Amino acid sequence: MTGQQQKPHRNSADRPRVSAHAFPILTVGRYRLRFVARTSGSLPQWAGSTWRGAFGHALKQSVCVTGMKHCAPCPLFARCTHTRLFETPPPSGQGKMRKYTSAPRPYVLLPDAGGTIEEGGRFGLELRLFGSANKHRDLVVQALERSAWKGLGKSRLRFESSGPVEAQINSLDMTPGKDLPVLSGDLRIQLLTPLRIRVRNHYVGPADLSFGDFFSILLRRLSMLCSFHEKRPFETDFRALVSQAHSIEWQEAALELVRLKRYSSRQHSALDMSGLSGRLSLACHDAEPFLPWLWLGQYTLLGRGCVMGLGQYTLDH
Image (cartoon, rainbow, N blue to C red; front, top):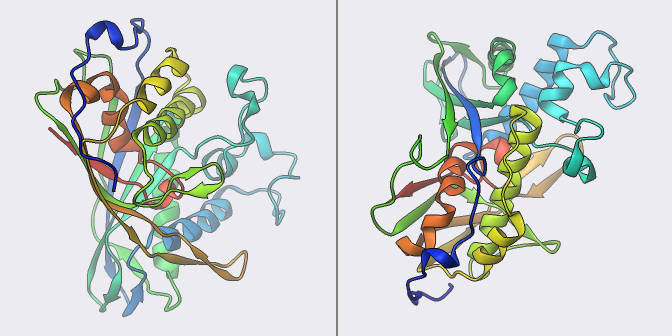
């Protein structure tokens, strides 16, 4: 656990100065799918990996016209909807983003907790789409429904849709005074699903998660989502902002390691997906300069495996 010492109040002059165009604007579509089980069976407690694998296969079957087993050599790779959503290569010559070999996937899957589900049992899945991916929402929803119908997990648990999809689409503007709330007290962060952050080729443990690492990885994710999928990159002094983040300590950090594994059909082996769970907090004056990115991160999730629902957190203040 990191220290709980409260840091002295900082002057506004010490905080990074940013322009009027320094904050992210991201379209977030939230779609709630509901299912009823056609058979009895079970799903892993954290079932996001199961849904993601089935979704990828169903999506490819929906759009693939060449039938090639591997996508990368396909002559339609750069224009394929499956590629853009599920593989997401970065556009060539994308300025400062050209150094990345892949872009963040423009979706997140948040299934209900798994376990044993009897025939007739109910199950829910929240799909989030970011930026331009929302124009493909019907295709994505159909692929998820097809995955559920064919069966999920080792027991091939089968579902059918049990009602219309609830949709909420918002363009979230994190410019202060727009959609960003005013911070009225200390900021508390509750990790809802295991958080996996990799720093210098190692996954961070409960005693080693710094605010600087947490924030810099979130900032990179949001910058890439806005650049690749919203086409509205935000410009700020990234170096100064990250440097300040590394100078701040958590006011409280009560974390534990949650053991988690998933089976990879491609690698034919179990993969370690363990991550951090618990709560964190920042003093109000420390959190204030970083609130636009921390607030938006609630919608995009953070860290490795976030497309499968890992790295979900909520803020309270």
